[in-house]
Amino acid sequence: MNTELTSPQDTERWLCAGLCLPRQEHVTPEAVTAAVPWLLALLAESPALPPLAFVMDLGRLVAGVPLAPSAPVPDTLPRLRAAVRAYDDHVLGRLAAESHLEAVSAALARLPAALRPRGIAFLVARVLTRMGFTAGSPVSPALARRVLERPPAELLQAGYTALRDSGASAALERLTEGYEALASAARRAQALLGDAESFTLENLEHLQGKAQRMALEQAVEAAEALSRTLPPKLRARPVSLAPLPTALEDDAAFPQGGFSSVSNVGSLENLVTSELVYMEDEPNLDLFDVRYVEGELLYYTRDESITVRRRRVITFVLPPGLVDARVKDAGVRWQRVVVALGLLLCLVRRLSLWLGSEELHFRAVFLHADDGTSPLEAERGLCELLLREWRARGTAEVVTAATLEDVLADAEARTKRARVDVVLLDASRQVEKMFHSTGPRVGLHVLDLGAPSPCVRALRDRREVLDSRKPEPSDGAPRAGEHWEAWMGVTLELAQGLL
Image (tube, rainbow, N blue to C red; front, side):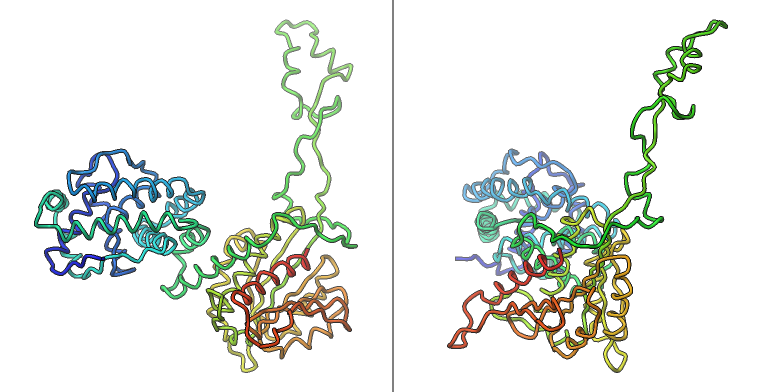
């Protein structure tokens, strides 16, 4: 049974006592001062707070400050002391061993100083969500601000007094329940950190509001979930396109033109430095001169070969009809359009890994509506954030186009120097018929999002359309998880079709 904080005095004791339990050797007023901005930022995230020491511990952990889980717990209720020990083992131990901790710490360190409290508050909220923690204590923001604005030394003194005060039983019971709930939730959680946290922190400076941040988190979570369904490696099918010289402006990005071997022919600037041991100070002829005349000195030689790689252009087309996919289907955690963007990110990541020896270029093209408007402007901004890493490298771009004909004409022109694939993400089927007018050298794929279970239709030629959708059950009722299974299936089919 959950204990309620029924009075402002109980809430104040709960807050102050929580500040005295972070897992470090000595809790100092300076540590409390550093944590107050994190706590105030967390109040803006959620009015229901976990034990405050958890916020302090997580903030110090991602900042690279070592914790001290073996430090003694202040003298208080035996049940609270046992709960803190369980919290040490199951929460802090799990967090310290998380494989994504280093990426999260690096992303947080790159944030401007003014944004770091907001980043830590976001991280705390995400970890609690991953754990399924629901035992937070509702706290009035006004009361919490008033308490946290007091001098840190005074807060610590009040907290240690509350830990030993028999009259603060309600606050201590609530604090104990919070720690027990944290330990229990961490034991059940599959992972406490993931790609979504590091990805969102890297883009936190560019996010416009909480709605866009939540959409980014969900798209990355969807990409992470779809990626787990793909095999580590897939074999690319053979292609007839020959390797082409890499563009001149890209030459510096590849390991070419360095020293490749040793020869007895070359210039003095490439002389092997060990040859200098044959030089002597005497004015007479030395062994170095003899070796030079005889052509026996050794020189480094450079590899001046041209870098050649196959070129690949993969274009994802998102027409305005995709607004019909802003729906949430049974058995799927995210909106259909959010999962589609997660699938796009998943394919970009995996294809970049599988086709690392080729010159890849990804394009996400958003089409205008007939009246010239951009119904998918929010999705376009989200896609720019999802592909920011590849856009910074110059291997991806997010653009707009007036019509599908313009996109297909551009794809046809690119086939002269690259293998080109076009993937249409469509929920209306109104633009799919235009694919049949494209040249045969462009690989065409349609991801049909017009139903809860998506399907892939690969146009191998202009007469045959392969549909991956399974027939509906005779009674018309979908099985539990059937729609998500369809998403996993189309992800694998698209990955195989694009290789």
